[in-house]
Structure formats: structure tokens, C-alpha cells
Amino acid sequence: MSVIENINKAFQLAFKISPKVGKFPYLAETLRRAGIERNRWFLPGCTSIYYTSSGEKVVNQMESLLPYGMHEIKPFNRNLVVDAIRKDQAGETEFPQFLKCIWEGGVVSYEVDFVNRVCTYYGADEKEFYEEYYSHVDINTTQNE
Image (cartoon, rainbow, N blue to C red; front, side, top):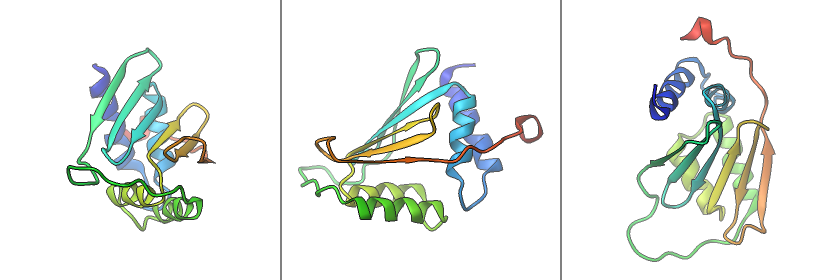
């Protein structure tokens, strides 16, 4: 199975088993079990790179948050970032809305470390950031595949 097929299979399983509220840890755990060590997102272009335990890398390109042209980057606002995370955790936003909300909070990139279960959200200079650990979930994949 290719690394892309492996990632897609992990996403399919995560969508199948995740609750509406608190779904991210389920996605993170299925990706970790699929051999994905980390995922780095670049906003507002909505490009992400998946880094695997085997050394392979995959890029994923979503639709950009902004139209073509130059745009100012907002100052990093920890409160807006945390609010966006909490709304997502509560199931109040879909992923594209979440990305837009953290962009509005001054986030230009973020990284999910699936091994250590931590998300780090960075401002433009990467000196300003917000780090948050997420909870471990136990997934019995044999029952859910």
C-alpha cells in the first residue's frame, strides 16, 4: 500500500469512529497508528506535509483561504487562537472554518506531533506560538475497520 493510500485509509477510519465533539484525537491516533509522525500546515495557502516514520513525505493541497494577491498578516492573538481551538473541539466548526479562525488569530503555520500528542500554532516570526497537548484515545481498530 502506498503512503497516500495509507493516509487515506487512516482518514476513512477516523471519520467512521470519531464522535462529533472531540473528534481530533481520534484522527490523530489513526494517523499515528498509520505511521504518520507529524503533520505541518502552512496558512493561508492550506498546504500540509505529512512526515512518516519511514521517511516518506506527502504534500496535501487544499483550497487557499485567500484570493490571489498580497495580504497583511494579523498579529498573533493567543486568545483568538485558543477560542478557535475550543470551538473546533466542541464540534462548532468544520475544518475549513477552523483554519480560517486560526488564520484570523495570526497563525501562519501549525504542526501536529502525533508521537508526543502536541499541536503547536505559530505566528509569522515563529517567536510567538501556542502549544497544546491533546488527550490519548484508545482505538480498537480491529472492531472498526
